[in-house]
Image (cartoon, rainbow, N blue to C red; front, side):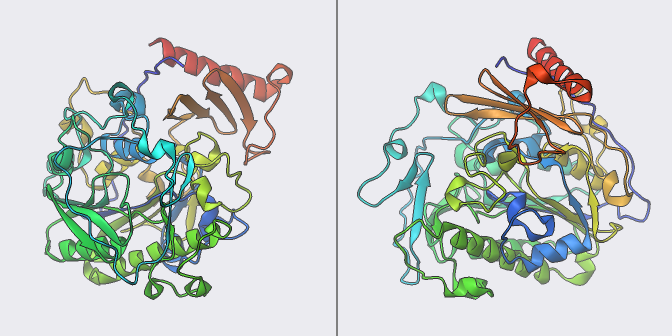
Length: 482
């Protein structure tokens, strides 16, 4: 499909006067978590045990009809730039080949459990790796990170009346050989970075750790380590406003059993060492539960007077991966890496000052909208800080946090990207969704068929369905011609 080019107005309104001019903002990202595995969404036949996420949903606003990109790097770039993938060029997971990044990796500690490593081609067994795991793409075909010329969210937060202290902790996955390599998180406006620069740790128990441009060899349990780094950094900020980008690697592969201290459910009794893929879902749920426990530790470590002036934004970067055997009604062939609902419908839960508890909002929204939303919460006016010529696709959904049942600002929402030779585009309105995969079209009624089990026959469409199909098709055609 031809390159899409379009722009959406970035809407700016003032927040209620009762909210501080400089609240803290904590963004928490789960890696590969669709809505079907989060209990508060009431979708999956089985879900992980997540008391912290349940508490957040009860204390704040849970968003439905919230889309991500189909894989991780494009989602992260969209949030940090407010721009869709076709603008930033980040249309798939970044596959950088590193120079000077060969820090020694320690041997996993004795308490490390079995880890099943996957590539898009499937399980990689020791001594018999998948060919796709060893064959790098040619340089001209590798997805790249955002250009150094992109204006990044933490840079804009520095322009606030009370400039924000900024940190990114955990997974980055936006750096490549062309945009700063190991320095990219700091070059993007983060005062502090601690985590991994790639798609995740090769092992949750032993990994190359990056801290402010310097690599070291670390061992222990990765997500515990980064949680402790985040707790320490928040504690160092005193009364200054801060923005923390907290990106967990769980529940991303490798599939494994986290430390028992992070599990309070029957997952504690799973065998730590296993040689079969038959029970991956149980280990996936254990990984989600471990992340939930660590989020709880992070939130509980923040003093009450600081939490009262802190917005917490939790979301998933894309849907659940097929190797985790996502629970019904998801089809494991239509999850992460696709633009079907299982690949791009993700949880979004927000709590904070003046947000009424226990609400559900349903505006059409996309991860790109978090850019404008965060600026609005921080009271940074984008019209004053962004270049006039910069096309921004972000539409703030902050008003939905404070007022109930507002009409959405979008009449349609888009998600698009590449995976290998496949180009996928999804566009939807209030009811219908058009999927285009390479040259193949599929059209769905998401009210009657929310899990995309029964594509509508386009030649037979009538009434509202026909009108929607023609409108969405014309929208894509117009975008492709700009």
